[in-house]
Image (cartoon, rainbow, N blue to C red):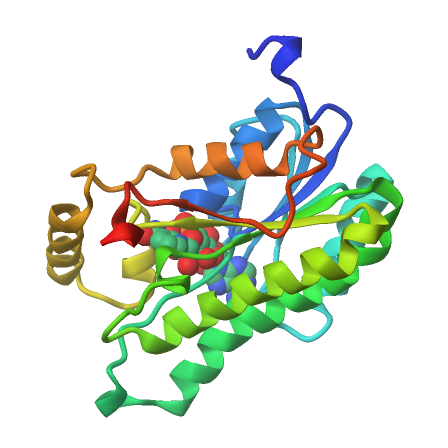
Length: 254
Ligand SMILES: NC(=O)c1ccc[n+]([C@@H]2O[C@H](COP(=O)([O-])OP(=O)(O)OC[C@H]3O[C@@H](n4cnc5c(N)ncnc54)[C@H](OP(=O)(O)O)[C@@H]3O)[C@@H](O)[C@H]2O)c1
């Protein structure tokens, strides 16, 4: 158990999207361990249930955040359970390998729906409650939100959009005491590539390629990304807003 000195999220309420796996799972558990009550959202009920088993502060809501009315449903669920909302972690996202020569309208639409539109609507629905709590939003971007990604331009474009939303909302909401930041992971060992439909051998090849390029010589771990999400969301960090914190072993520098 963490000591009370580390429980910076005691009595705070958070929503984490994509809570059933990878970075979202790690963030949900870390927030709960830091004292927050957390609503974990995602489509797969079983994956969410596994996350919820990690801590009694975690409740779950299985749902597709791209569905009509989902943002209001998610925010209402958290506020009805706990009476407030302090933090929205817009983590759910998907990637896609799609060179320009293979452009497909439905891939573009799905990427932007999940990575840009759904988090925007969640932030909109959360806003009245974040105003009351002087809360914050953490958007999960990527190294490729500010680096080019040959073969994945549209994924990179969605994350670039996320970073611009972060900065613009930060300026818009600073006078109201709401902070908006982003954490941009580099290649991190999760299910993200499998979720993009890539076969195991391609995933292994991509991880090997990335590992060789990353200056620290290793892939990221979802728990260390979660750790930085908590640090930038820490309610004591009232002067940090509009920032994109890259957690990628220096990959963005090369
Ligand atoms: N891993 C990396 O290398 C890396 C690098 C940079 C950025 N990121 C970003 O980090 C974030 C988390 O990804 P991850 O690496 O942890 O991969 P992941 O394990 O595939 O997590 C993505 C999560 O999003 C959820 N999700 C997908 N579509 C959804 C929908 N329509 N409604 C609700 N939830 C949905 C998934 O749950 P369900 O399938 O159950 O819905 C899943 O839990 C993403 O935004 C990703 O772009 C990852």
